[in-house]
Length: 439
Ligand code: MN
Image (cartoon, rainbow, N blue to C red; front, side, top):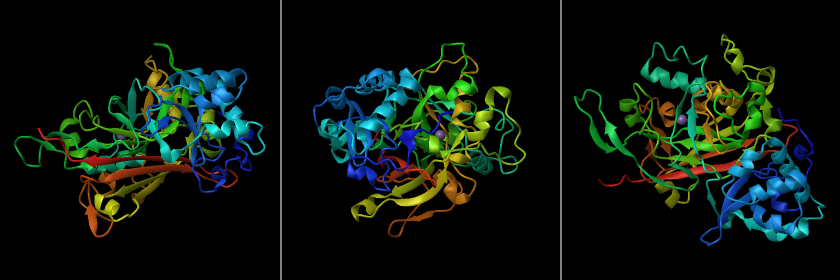
């Protein structure tokens, strides 16, 4: 587990004033990494670090400031895009980079003059996926989500017996993962209405979101060599926000016996910034499970994981309809929860994924699964918030929704805050639904 150090000191201030705003997502204690260029420019993509309302261009910084040792190696890797080679370097290099950037951005730093021209306003930037995502796996780590969804299908037996023993997951598709701001067309597919003899093809009428976190893999493992619980977090580069868009009507018709397929592989939205595990160190929490939960098998258990395997990341889901946008209304919050309610931790996902010898690679992405909390208003999907589409939600100025309509945008935000620590944020993962293509 990563220890607190001077980069987490809540009293640290940056020489860039916008980074010192107490409600900001990107103070000097955060330093998340992404891939960017100036919007509409012919520039090449490169790595950058969010600081206040700016991005520190790491390619430019690498030419103007001399970094030493491991930090120099890490800056060279972070100056490129995609960031897979940075992810492959491992925690000592990531930590050296964080320390070097923290020192260079502090008030009184001798590097202020050299780095000031390396700042690009976030408003002027466009992002790309931060990594080539070779493989994407989506899990199901919220027992509250699994129980609520299970209840819709099996009122008497909502939670399947394997849930408390094995982290449930499926292999997703990486080609349709897109960075925040990338809109997508409503999927078409086969559905079968209740009571109908045959299915029909058409646009999904039950388009839903799933509030999740994405976990980027750092150094991988060789085939046949599982990653232990004690080593698992050294294979995690950092976390982002993730929306696993889901067509519930397609899903209901296709999911047995092999799980979701076309209902989930048409679009997945990720936030541009990756918040490192080191930045999240002040927000670790004990792994807490509902009373009566069995102890996991030893390969999924460790004292450190029980003591602080969870992370308290606050998550908001909001919607903005086309009419709201046209009237200048902001996105409206639909639910709020925290990652600390997850049944399985990030380390357990890594250990479970590799226990059979499966090899992970730098830049692979693991989705946590929908992060619903224990209360109804903490649900991370419309399926839960509308009781399977039976109860509509009032939105905007006199509109209502059960599922997403054309022109709607879903916005996921995430942040961490607690007494004695500086608040840090993830920014947002936002995408809007366009009408289905004609066939
Ligand atoms: Mn999902």
